[in-house]
Image (cartoon, rainbow, N blue to C red; front, side, top):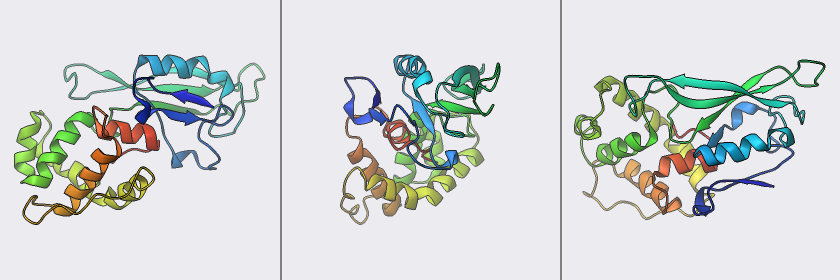
Length: 215
C-alpha cells in the first residue's frame, strides 16, 4: 500500500494499492486522482512505475506528461496548473495503451474557474441566506450566473455526497428550524465538516479522500 498525504494530516491520507491505484473498478471514470501539495505529487511521481494504469491495468508504463492549465480566481490574470497529466506509454514497444489521464490538485473545481475554498465560503453563506448575498461574500469576479450554476450542481449532488460521507461517519442531527434558509443543504455541509474536522478546506479533503469531484 502507498500512502499519499502529509504525515501531520491523517484525515486526508489515502491508502493506494501499489498494484492498482484506483482499486478494482473497471471504469476509470468512476474515480479521479488528486494530490494535496508538491510533496504528495513528488511521492506519487516516484512510484509511477509501481502503479497500474487505470485504463489498461498495465504496470511500469506510466510516465509524466505535462500539465493541465486553466484560469481560476486564485490567480485571475494568468493560467495556473490545475492538474498533472499522466501517459501510459506505448512507445518503444512498451505494453501501455497510449492513453492519458489527469491527477488533479485537490483544491480545484472541475470545469469552473474557482477553488474549493471559495466554493466552501459560498455554500456556507448560501445555505444561511440568499444566493446573491453568498456571491458577494465570496469576493469573486465570477458572474452571478456562474455561482448559480455551481449551486445547482451542488444541489443535484447532495444525495451522492451524503452517501459518500456515510463511509466517514453517521449524519449529523438536522439543523434547527429557522437556523438556516436551506436546512437540508446546511445539514449536508455540517456532515461534511464533521467528516473532516481538521481539514483547512472540507471540500478539498472530500475530493482527495473520496477520489471524486465534489460537484
